Image (cartoon, rainbow, N blue to C red; front, top):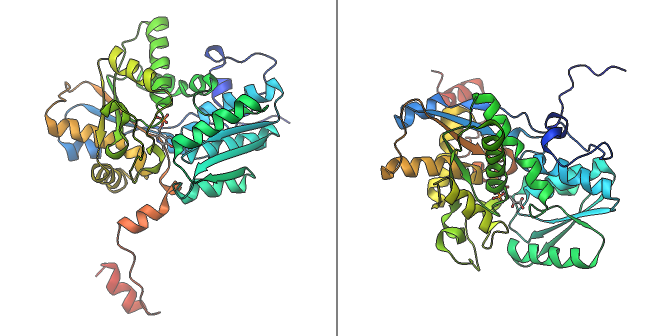
Length: 357
Ligand code: AN7
């Protein structure tokens, strides 16, 4: 039967720039092709002249940018004939790996830091049938354990140290560039394990080499309690409400520094307070609900505007990457914003609470 209006995933859309061949089975959930949303309400709120765009990666099939890399990593794993994939995760990688593993008919094994995963993400890994093991330790320790397991057993590591993850994730740089008709001037984004900033930088460098497009300035932001790259040292006990980026020893540390230095950008930190404020701004002014870690991008932009360190001309394009969906971490919203009033079953009482009158 003919498939009508089939949305293709990133492997089919970007075959020519990805490490796939005719022999690679394409394991896809039609990821990518996420919207680049013009944020004119935030532009007005901030009183700036330049253009602000939001790359809403929470609209990928499992709710985060990880799907772009996972389609490539799991397709290559299936091609190689392994029987299982494994990852350490602060949540989103595990949600994505377990979903793509199901489609490939592979087992998935997920190692998470105990008590430090947002509920939405844990429920995804569980419903997709992953073998989930919670370790009494932080993410960095989980990744060490997974790396050791991979040295001794025939399982494929699908964390972002797997180069196929980076290849898949670089497609977001291509999409942004296609949507704008040019590379952006500045890109603000969260940094955790630093795979994503590495992937974007690879994408933009390729576009620079093949199409002579300008390189954007990369502005990466870690959470203040988990900012090893900023502090130039491992953080033994990282702390932040943005659990996705609660990482004290990023695997792609050096690559993140390269992106920063080659682009004349920064890797800086934003406090939990600044993250939550930007997170609420996105929901309240643009109707875009993201998980807290994602809001580190806008928090970083606001910080640099406040500092006076950031003053682009009116025609410039600034993109904030929103890495994960707000429904990943619904508890945070319910805790932060006041709960709804409960009234007895009466039209009058309901009307009184609504503010209609
Ligand atoms: C929403 O899932 O590390 O700098 O194990 O889930 O590429 O690590 C997630 C990271 C930003 C940081 N935003 O990206 C994992 C994991 C969200 C994330 C990041 C993550 P990287």
